[in-house]
Amino acid sequence: MHDWLIVGAGFAGAVLAERIASQRGETVLLIDRRDHVGGNAYDHVNADGLLVHRYGPHIFHTNSDHILSYLSAFTAWRPYEHRVLAAVAGKLLPMPINLDTINLLYGLNLTSPQLEAFFLGRAEPVTEIRTSEDVVVSQIRRELYELFFRDYTRKQWGLDPSQLDKSVTARVPVRCDRDNRYFTDKHQCMPRDGFTTLFRRMLAHPNIEVRCGMDYRELLRTGCNWRRLIYTGRIDDFFDRRFGILPYRSLAFEHATLDQPQLQPVAVVNYPQYEPYTRITEYKHLTGQRHRKTSITTEFPCASGDPYYPIPRPENRMLYRKYEELADTRKDVYFVGRLATYQYYNMDQIVGQALATFRRIQDGDGRAIDKALLAAE
Ligand code: FAD
Ligand code: UDP
Image 1 (tube, protein in one colour):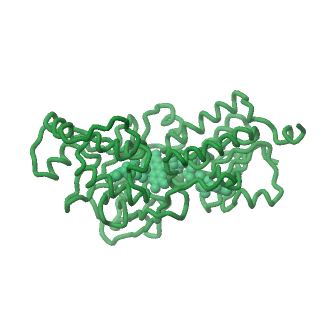
Image 2 (tube, helix red, strand yellow):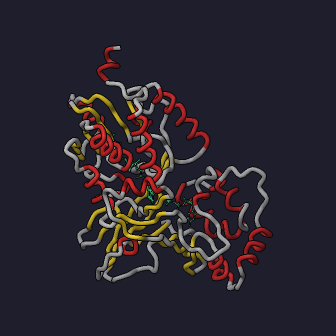
Image 3 (cartoon, helix red, strand yellow):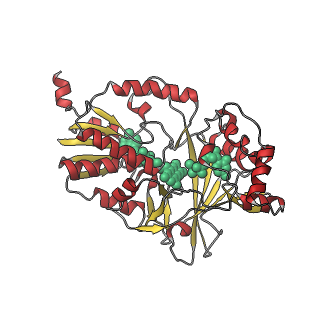
């Protein structure tokens, strides 16, 4: 009998396992259906000795001192500011769009105030910004939207930006200065020894038992016992998809190692046009590793496969609300993480969500009820 069962060993599950084991002294069984911990942030050393990310590039950034300080107990950090180039019109141009992007694209020599005027003069007035198209065309001329955003988004999501919530393309700003960093967060860094090492340190507590390659449904059949449950898998799966399937966008990753020291000038090159893939990542830029070879991953968006991206559309949010209402009636289960709350969250937001859940557990909210007690009711 464990005090807790936690389903899913990504950031949501691992943070909660660590907190519960170390702060409450209770026992945790942490399971994951994959053969490793780390969830989508999992990284590993490949056959050529290069540290790579199995599920696409994961770059840590946060504005929260608290979240950084919490994770720093389990890792040292390598300073890293992410920079991305977009392959457009036969050139590699800074993305997010900034002063250099426009000057290089059009062979101009604009200043920042001139660029502001250039953007303002050509943007389209949008009374209510609702969609991912609105966000961009209200800031920059349509031609730039088409070059940098429209087809990338169509590939990535299988939907036109006009069919997607504004929050998607709003992740990428438009700038009039020369700042070419992808993120502007206060803290930008990579775990020095990789994400998986961070997870292993987090989970190296005698109160935590980790079982990989174990699905929740399979565990239910073994008769294994626990008192409280934290679930970080898909919420629609948990409830047998009774209201229908919550849609996700997936990716196929093509991993390769090249017999050359470097492929591209930055970690990520985006392909926002006709290519069937969206981006190529070269890991050495993220890890700082020196090696005579280099490893890369190319991302091909697709409809089926692992559930990577919840699709932000009003009808999906409404469907999620039905599951959320049902979840609220389950006083014995906490639903945490990207899949269980159907939100397009970054890693730091998930760590924040897990730490907030732990505070609720400590405060003794209604969900911290023994299964045994529930059964007795
Ligand atoms: P996950 O990491 O998905 O972990 C959930 C785990 O639950 C999985 O390992 C799964 O196998 C397991 N599971 C599910 N169902 C069951 C079941 N029934 N039984 C057993 N186990 C189960 N964030 C950033 O901050 N920076 C980035 O650069 C970044 N890049 C990203 C790139 C890609 C391609 C993707 C897809 C995401 C990226 N993210 C990034 C987001 C980041 O991956 C998530 O915020 C984070 O991993 C979510 O953690 P989680 O624990 O909620 O979910
Ligand atoms: N996007 C785009 N062109 C780009 C980069 C991003 O159109 O060159 C859009 C696209 O819709 C993408 C969204 O902006 O899904 C968010 O981009 P981000 O790089 O944050 O995506 P993630 O890393 O989460 O896949």
